[in-house]
Amino acid sequence: MDESDTFAVMRAEMVSNQIARRGLREPGLLQAFQQVPRHLFVPESMRAHAYEDRPLPIGMGQTISQPYIVALMTSLLRLKGGETILEIGTGSCYQSAILSRLAGKVYTIERVCELADLAKDRLANLGYSNVQVFCEDGSKGWPPAAPFNGILVTAAAAAAPQPLLDQLTDGGRLIAPVGNLYGQMLQLWTREKGHLDCQDIIPVSFVPLRGKYGWSLEDWELPGNSP
Ligand code: SAH
Image (tube, rainbow, N blue to C red; front, side, top):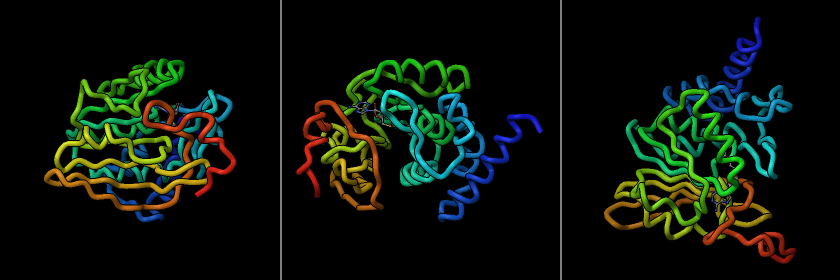
């Protein structure tokens, strides 16, 4: 068996044991996770661990999320195909690649320009041509391409940023971890006829969202800042 076959087997096990077994069974979603080669989205030294049931460091103090969490957040968008999606926190661009298989157009914003540049090269090399990467403060959203059918925030904020809620279409969905260093709740926001509804999904743990509507370094690490 060559290396890519070995990774494909590990990927199939990830899909069935970590995603389908936990209740996410939409065929398109599972197919996307089977197709996207997660080991090519982590540093070379981490490749052997790419299909484990946990987040992994990707450099610059940032992480690639646990596969199940990527799947859950993707599933909560209820994609049918053709949607315009905004992701805040490109990181490794694994989540962006998954979204590119299931939506029409993906805009992804990363504030660390080295990570954004790596992501651009990676997505181009792997042929994910419906994703655009920008190095910016994504806590303000991405007005040039708004409104969005779905917005995924993959870093933790103290509250769902208002500019992002404002950039949802009618019927749009926003998924964001909301909380602090000690833990966050994954929130699902839906906009229906101008009315916003918020639902708590599960407790999660993400790196902080920085920028205008995110955490400052000092506040995030303030010892008294517990729930
Ligand atoms: N979705 C990623 C994981 C993201 S980790 C993946 O699939 O790998 C969170 C990322 O959010 C980090 O790369 C961090 O630099 C970025 N980030 C934090 N605050 C941000 C902001 N205000 N705008 C854009 N990106 C931000």
